[in-house]
Each structure stands twice: as structure tokens, then as C-alpha cells.
Amino acid sequence: MRKTLFPLLLVPVLAGCGGKSEAEQETEATTKSGRGTVTCEGSAMSGETGLPADFPRIGGITFVTSVKSGPTQAADGYANTPLKNLYEQYQAGMKNAGYTILFNEREGDRDAEISYETKDESSRGLLALRNCDADTTSVHITNRPS
Image (cartoon, rainbow, N blue to C red; front, side):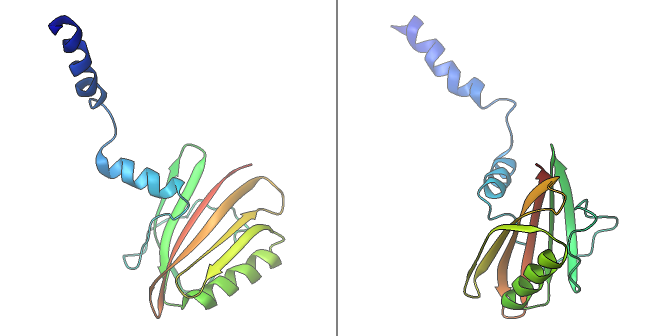
């Protein structure tokens, strides 16, 4: 019995070695869920976001981070603009840029999403807006090649 039990006890120990940290797993799960990172404050990042050149540039957004993970670019920031107004500005901006809106949804003043495909069909992405407070909205954008 002991000979059989020892390898079974060793498997969970080995499974925990060399994996991602709990924080990395949490971030990955949040990003995959579509909810994304919620950013309500922070200093402006330097450099470009890595989003498509024709991605709508809405005034008043402070991008705090932008990270490329495999083919996916994710940019996080916030705006001192109510969620409803920012949602409407992005919808108009995407329409003006010739983007196809694959789906969109706004749940009151709590959160909103817009899934899009670029005009040239080279990439798709998701814009997720989350209410921080009455005047601040979190912006999380993911974009990846089609």
C-alpha cells in the first residue's frame, strides 16, 4: 500500500512546482473572462498603447499600462468621464473609423462592452468599461490579429 500511495502524494507537490503565481493566474482568468483589469487611477504610461493605428482616440483617457501577451495587446487606463458618455463616444468613434461592431452591451452605469473588428478585418478586440465612481470610468482594451 505504501508503494502505491507515495507516487500519488508526490503528484500534487510536483504539480505546484514551476507554475504561475496566484496573482498571475488571477490576472489571466480575469482577462480571459472579458472583464479585464479595472484601473481607476494611476500615472500615464510613456510610449504607445500598441493598439491599431486607426483605433478611436477618445480625449481624456489616461492609459496606465499596455502589455503584449502572445498575439494579444491589452491596454488599461481610465477616464474622468461617466461610463455612459465614454461608451457613446467609443461607439461613435468606431463607427467613424469603419469598424464593425460585433456586439455591444451596456448595463446601466455599471459596465459596458463593445466587441469590434477593425475596418481592414486584420484584428478583433473587446473594449470593456467599468464604473469606478460617478465621474471616473475604467477602460480595458484587448486587441488581437484575426
